[in-house]
Image 1 (cartoon, rainbow, N blue to C red):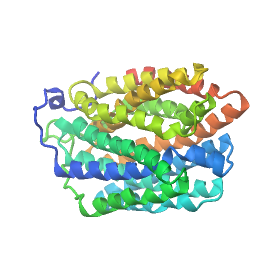
Image 2 (cartoon, one colour; image 1 turned 90 degrees about the vertical axis):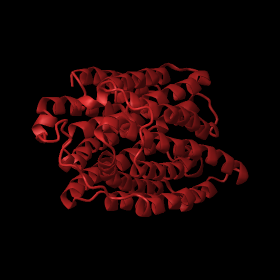
Image 3 (tube, rainbow, N blue to C red; image 1 turned 180 degrees about the horizontal axis):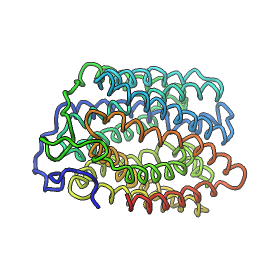
Image 4 (cartoon, rainbow, N blue to C red; image 1 turned 45 degrees about the vertical axis):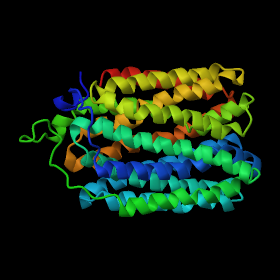
Length: 399
């Protein structure tokens, strides 16, 4: 059972494949956007608890609701992108809104205000996701699609390295004032907006992703209903256990790690993620992408089982590093796989549906994790996530 790629994608790649300019520009947009995001993201647990007095359940509510609205905006923008036959304006608009609202964290005085900022940020992220992913797929040929998505993911994660590192340095510069760091995050955010509007180009699409250009594939041929149901079931089940990564930070602090280590943990995780994303994407052009995604799910299950079983903080650093491997084997590769299976004229809509499934599960996943944490124990939500990820991996084997 293959991954739905054209046969040419499994051939050995040329040693020096020229990456299209549009892919590089989208990669740099991702870099600056994630630099801005990660400057703030890993500081949110400490900020919400120490400055705003938010309880653990508030984390689940904020992150879950934010990801849920993101899922619906993905569904809308995917359909709208195919309907209007445009990708770039929708993607650029999403990047713009997200980077306008994020610095407003600096003026919040309650966790409810943080909720609305995260809500707007995630809605904008969702709105840009499907058109951007479709534009990525339009910008690179099918034989090197995994490498293209891997490069964008690597640059995105490189920004996620620069972001926490910048946060650590700025916290020292500003004597621990988190609000000043939130303001500084506006600088890479502005670079992201300018690149999205003025450097990224719209790309004329081909009519089909079929391996035979003379014979376009119908949607039912490219994405058989049985396969679709299994893939969606596996993705939905996994997403129900995939609560916000902020819970990993809370767990690390619950085990005794200092709050200042949060950006450092994020830095370690993202170094591994960035280093492996492009090689993993290239590998997915040679072997079935599904195999790599299943491997990623199994690694996720092992990491979350580790967080459930830990009683001391010594292994937290190791688990965060392994967690980066999971991301490198799933994020970009899953998108490349979907692009393989979807017809070009409805690709954004298909991306929207998949992202919608992930987002719809995000609210119950994070809210349930917060509730289980308070009702039973800090270890319990991680045990449940591990079991669900393992089950999803088995389901995906039959897709």
